Image 1 (cartoon, one colour):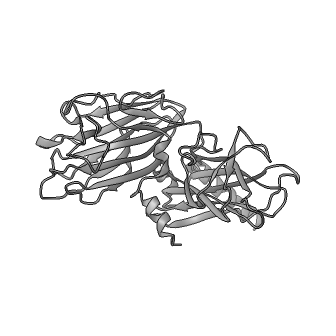
Image 2: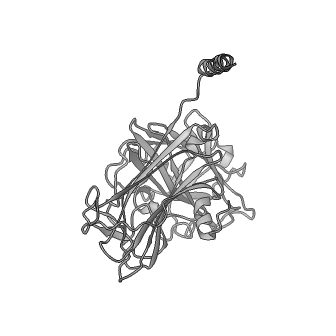
Image 3: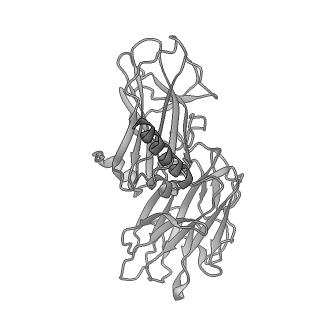
Length: 396
């Protein structure tokens, strides 16, 4: 089944930035150093508050360390003025980091070291060429691999010429307590005309793969942290009538007649187990509605391949669940082994207004967890086969 929504398809392919970048540790590289000085080898690691060149919004990344390699003279801070104006127009003295791979330096890498009990969510970055880039264009292949293990995600940019930029969205969620390497390969160009900016990542604690699952984080310029508005432009927080299922707030679509909110999670880290048919995903979430009017709430979980095509879905259907009848919040659940080829999961919240001025479809306490189901051992399979043979003989 094809995904016929071109806007959503481009989002899933990761060719444009997503709203997650504003609610994370974001490395802006305005470190206060002089041009062409080496970036600190541990810059941006274990952040609990803002530092020069890095902003922490809506949750620290204190349990994620960073290591930049190789060194020296590869990861160099640089001013954008007159050189990388299109990548960073802020005209700072130093506000991007240059990938100086002249003289056939090895591929630049950033290693994310993740403490036990935490996960890396790698959101996005911007990459661009300088104004004095030579006459040829070149693409970059940016990959994510488990440290000491196999590659789990890769994206190749367009061929970038002078002043060209690209915003790359990963939306990648790693395994708990697992380290990852972000690698930059210029295909042998070996030049010094490329820089990156606004490297954004989150720390997820516990087993939930969904970022900001209860809409508890502070709004960023009126937008819900970690989520994209597909339809309706006024999604916000609500805290009364009904009271939240948990915490202090929940998802509220405000006035739009039809509203949809979405978050895409890249699950390539589990690709091997998914393709073996042994990776289970458990979803749960709560819905509610106002006590009159018939406004409905609906949750769809789309399991997507790497290109964004829908392979299978969970769809609750549109439900009217007034909070004054029975329980204030109705629980929805779904458990399944992800179909082979699944690489992304999109969580979609849909609300429909049937009467009145507000769209009163409410959502709270969303959860998506995953685990590998053990494969039957050869001994167990042999035992099952012998049992079947004995049963057949007995019946005979």
